[in-house]
Length: 632
Image (cartoon, rainbow, N blue to C red):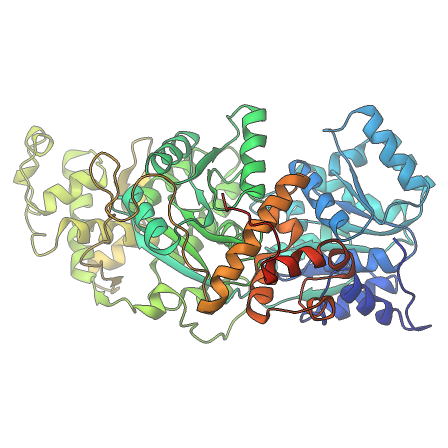
């Protein structure tokens, strides 16, 4: 594309023009201009910026301003086509090379690169292992290298990719080409590892505010997870697009089937599905409105769908980094969104067992345990969730957010020292007196004085601790077990998840250490689903769409008309709806009601190419002269 030159000696002027003309934004977000100026001038940069914070512009604009083609290294082969489609919709000349293409398709892209007809070229990292690719890059003009999802280089991070270890060769082979490495997820330790492995010690480092204030973080006690999830979707997110994460493939299948049976458009996604089915499900999620994707964590990295309104976890994430990365897929458009996690005792037991059984040496298992401990601390905190989350990424001193469950409904804490002593004493006696270990359920039965067949079989009613815990409910005792595990005062061992004491247990039993516990809630919200799959409120079929959040009442019907037009246009072109316009842009149009192309050009997200392509159609929708389109 032909881009405007900036004022001589001041490339930032050209960058600002590109921002307005191509992307339709009037001003840079915090930190973007400094990064872009540095890279345009030929410098390296390492950018840590949350999902939805505008990372892509930090390499896309310099690639458009600098001579040559910006080469983007990305692990997201399945999404490259959509990424390229989104750029082409803006008038940017973009292409990709990966294993999904045939020989003729690759040759076409290679010829465009050599002819200087590409602004951006996306490559999978494994392509850089192929000598022919390296020779191709040698023959062209490279504006910059962008290393997307740079946390994949960190072996102790949550998403390590071996192919990323070779990316230090970019600077060795092309020392004069600037590099910009970008990620949304990095602790200070991961930041250091990225810097070291990619040789970016002398680069410009930008660490943005990791806060996503539009996301409401909530962690609920897991009691009836399917019913709890259904309640969330029906009461807060009817008809919204969202992601539900499950630990196992079997759980993914069951939850997707359950939601579909309740009239919710839900699809499964996991590595065990047929490749064609998996690709079709991903395409539907990206290109249709209101799809709920039920998935393992194999799904989601690089998903550029801006209107994901919720991310729900039905199993405990393995690390805070993974949790932050996954929840960050909600609300990329800056609108209100929900990050919801159902968490219970069995999650802790299961994760501890997985760590014990994991391949690798003791140091590897210790690192996994450290990740899990941090995640448990976030779950069990009585303080602001957001403060704890930001502190994990080195951002300390934040004030309570007022937009998480612990802020909105502050939990109570209580002195659980005596309860902890009772429970630890039970575990100790089972081990010492009977030389056996048992799981949490059996220990709780003993504390509650229940004469179950298993208790009778082992004559555990004769233990001095039998029935000493009748002052607490079963739910509360399971909470005690869970929190003692989280605090390292209790351990899980063996294939069957039996309970055992730790070195720290002795201090509690001796009375030299007090134990503060989070009080369990009295009740958990139940679903409105009727037996047999019916719903008291929504009726059969697809869930009713809620009125968009923070949208004036008079603008809501206009917004829906614009969405219907966008959906039909996207379907006609075979691209995701957000490639046409983001929800945030349609909301601003519906609210401001521009009366001409000049007014429309002032809307955020309406660049020159989209104004020329869609401007008259948008105005026709606003004036009612367009042929009406029924929403799906």
